Image (cartoon, rainbow over all chains, first blue to last red; front, side):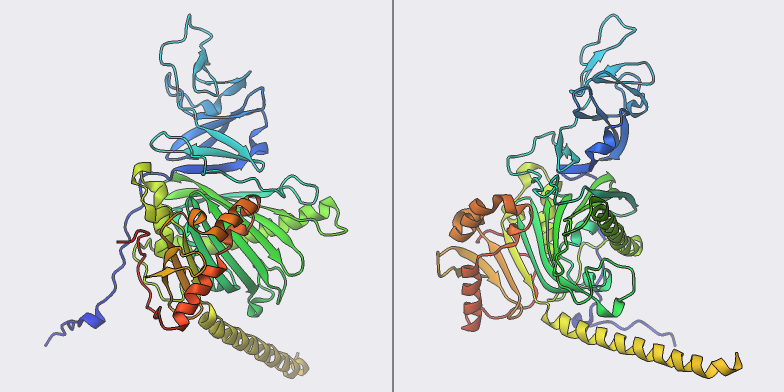
Length: 396
Length: 88
């Protein structure tokens, strides 16, 4: 007799993952490409973004220009060319392109042909960073779609950016954006325990308001930690699909502004960038303060490595199975979708304000217990090994 | 989600509770236009929004929702799928 699989009743129906597929289009919005200073070295810079290759260069007025990198003449790569005056010169035949996308001159030719125009990308310099506007429909940003000024940046009381950049492959950037609502992963992945958690989505912004304390059973492990038993207030808002400003204020007086931003390279790859500025503590020299910013930058890198380890092996999932103690994943994705549809298809429910206070009571009851048990176990293990050493010593 | 009228300004929103501590609020209009409190916050706090003030909610509305739940007019529900921000 062969075993046959039992029919399940409706109650026992197996949940099946709908992995969906990465969208082939890229989000509409401002995308941060990095610190402006990193593009101001007199050389053209290649940027792989939006399924293509772009070139950034500084002209004689100090403005940063952004063009498609492939020369419309014979396809030469402008990012391998040279800056000549206000123009970028193609390494193939020395065609000169201006920041407005027009071919300004062809030194060996009698005249520039008609329609000698390539794609010029709208740019914005703000907070010491360079932004590019991407819109598959070719439209401009609205008055509301602005990247705010970070008022603390550029003041004497705060450090300069400590900035990092990393290419994340085989992952769609939605995984990164999902973290906005993912209350419980902060405990399991980032070793911090959320004590309060709220989301607000409105227009092109998505906010996460959270307070947290570090997991006491992880003392000594490497992770972003504002001090044992210290509670940190965190306010993080995405302005558009890819640029998040996160203000962190710890009980001990440490204040940090963290930027978490990205731009897509391909449908399954993005460049993750993050930077921190730190408020200088009383009596701190500029060097000491910058060192502190570097430490937070390093800690942030470790935080993202924790995420990357999960993304590397996880499945894309369009139908997450949620419990009542999770954050509003579906509503976040409804908000996020506005950047992947034509403007005329942005529906009211994508942009109308939505608030969600996660109930963290049950989670914290369990986590406090688990942390206490882990600490007990660590204590017992260390006292057991201490007595084992004492016994072993005479024979050594 | 269930329609709730703010006791202070009469603004209609959709609200839901999974537990005493949890609250979901789906606004049906431009919140910064219809809610006097948020409107005031927005005018006063535009500069601050970049840092943190955007996380603020209207205390009167949240008090209304909590009271409705306590009085049994907003029964606790199980997790639901998102509700469109438009009244049917």
